Image 1 (tube, rainbow, N blue to C red):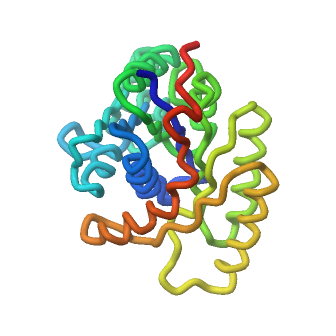
Image 2: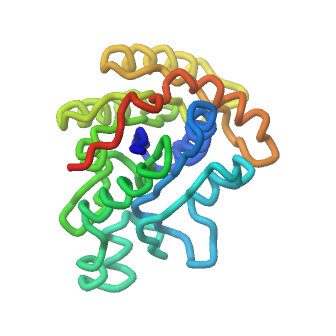
Length: 246
């Protein structure tokens, strides 16, 4: 089989991208039999520490129908190319897997899963490879829609608009726009930004994915699945966006 794919990026770091990826994964598991989550480049963790895909699996209770995989892991908490440079110099940068390698990994996962979620590192244009490939390039090459995770705080409108415009200029398919960390006590700024973010989603052709509560964790799995239920309609179905093999 050849499953669908969904790429996930954020408007910034620490916007709740991994938790939203977990919610999207739960929503996908409600639609298809098997789901894979792939992280092309994981930085900022040691070999014996859990990475973002491990966090996704833990948040969902390690379901048997879920496969998680990383492309490359780098210790420094930096953008992937900079992390490789810091860890091992130019030779480590040149040794980073290229775009084709990641596309082959995604295609292999898609052959065995009904859905593959690809979580980027940081924002849309963070370079993942020595030749500058980004999550936008992965989305474009696979023709997968892009889920954008944003925040509700002051400054989010500019960051979100820039991300959506950059994706559109590159021809990336719009997916859902999701607020990744909605506070328990939202202020007038948060509520105003939510309304404007809804408008931005509509203007750019993104489905509105709502807001995922802040601080969701394994202890709040019921809340996570409740948030996931609200995303079911914005996750591409089994045949909506099958992985393209360029």
